[in-house]
Image 1 (cartoon, one colour):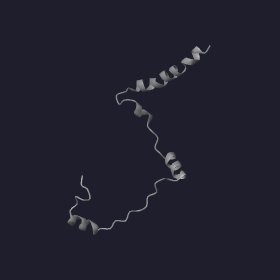
Image 2 (cartoon, rainbow, N blue to C red):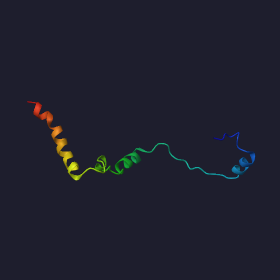
Image 3 (cartoon, rainbow, N blue to C red):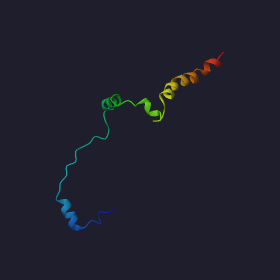
Image 4 (cartoon, one colour):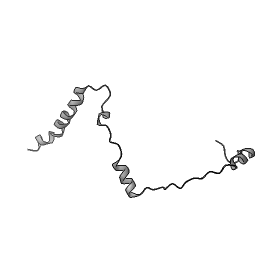
Length: 78
């Protein structure tokens, strides 16, 4: 990587010919902008958590198995 010392004088002169205007960019977004960005973010596709080779039967069994696992504490409460 070149340092400022390593830049040839001829190149420095050519670069100094150009003038670039850099607009002010606010560093922190306003509260309303952050809420709007949060509301308008696209939803994640729930099917992406399954591998592409998953069969429809395997995908259909996931809610049933999840329900059975989550209902296990009910059987042990008595």
